[in-house]
Image (cartoon, rainbow, N blue to C red; front, side, top):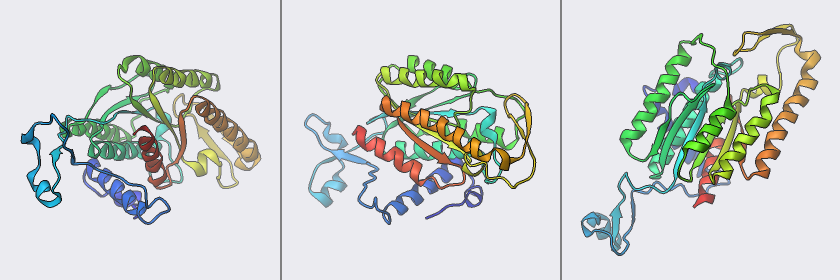
Length: 306
């Protein structure tokens, strides 16, 4: 089931859009080579000796003749945090309907929906040159609503095309998160990785810091592939503007396209190799593509963690 951005945008709330994205993904899973991949949204768990009898669901017992207890929202299996890059470079779009930020927000919202239904605790950390908010991981519905409210706040800023320049300081934010998380967690990072070249080693060092603190890491590099990876513009002159510092450069894409693509590939390969070395999952995300592959990458990671 493919949901286009234009259709999703008509739905009233971010929570409803997230639900539709996840439902479409699960429907597609059943028709794909991954049809055997189970996506369990547990409402109950088997009875264990010592559990209070008053929590047994007798209706389920009547059907299955086995004891199951209702799984309450405070019970959690995994603690996860989503770090979302909200810097000005994430406001870019050219060929696509959605900016990188809008795409990242909807992906984050979909992840939160899946996490909540699986009774995992989820938290949110939007960041740019600093951490804007640090919403701790919990598994209650009221907490999920708090997260959606924060994500919707970012959507409003994106819709208003906020002129405030927000620079990126990914390494600083990741280091801070590594220090602040006291319990082993899964940290999902959504970012375009647009920083000065000399900052790349710092980002890798920060990712290492998370792993050193025993956290699991899933890094999504979100870009508009056609423009930002392929430089697939018509053969005429364009003025490109740095969205974080207001610098401009005039370019004829055909003259630099081959060299540009090589540089982007080198840059991506560097992160991919570093992530592989430190057992960090790295995935590319295209704002003109569906959410399916990115949601599957999360599910595979989640399955490995048990």
